[in-house]
Image 1 (cartoon, one colour):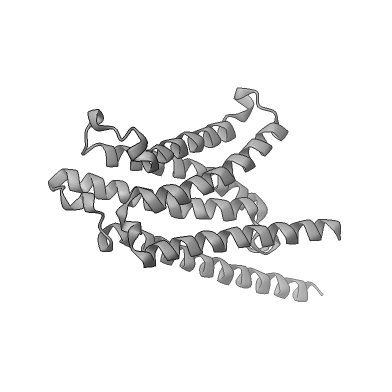
Image 2 (cartoon, helix red, strand yellow):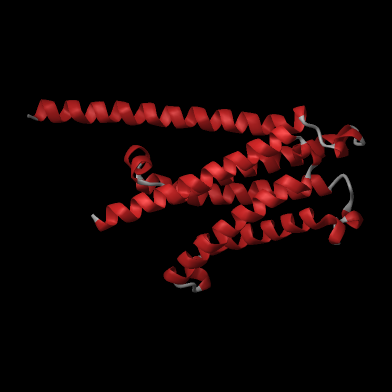
Amino acid sequence: MKKDEMGNKQGAGKNSFGVRMFFLSIFILFLSGALSIPFYFESMTLWYKFGLDKTMLRGGQIAGMSALVMFFMQIILAVRGQYLEKHFGRAGMTRFHRINGVIILFLAISHVLLVLAPEGITNLPIGKKYWPEMIGAILLLVTAVIVVSTNFRQQLGIKYNLWRTLHKTLGYFVLALLLTHVLFVSDSFEHSQLRAILILLFGALFLWVITTKILIHFDKKH
């Protein structure tokens, strides 16, 4: 009996390892595709930059695309679902969700600083003409609020139920801001194929979240 149990555990372990490697491969593929965009679909702003300015601007775009990918992962980590919890563990996913939030904030700040640095502090994109950039500023602010309130909730005296409600609400608000910002802030996404892929990915993520939430609700009732 003990041998059978050990065999089952080993089989489950191998299965979980295979599932983890599969998702890791998908993540690497997704990240590689996102990071290639600033190179294969150059924005017009890069055409007029040279030397260090061009390097910083491209680096800012790379940081922004990395933040986009990590935010996709953040939503998946937050929603989880029974299948992912089975193979990755609920505690591990929760822990990485918190760490990933800090990574996203770091990438978002790097994105802003590297994009603005070549233009200079006196040329901040402020006004109706720069509404996509203004949405980006709101996005950064909301992201900072989420990360700070999560990591310093007790120190700030925020009750858990209030934090949980705000965390979920702001998380989905960020999702809407992120899609709008990415679609309109750079002319790279004026290419129809890129725009279609991004909208499709956001749509797939939305459907996955809804489906997973329904399944979780159904499992709780039964």
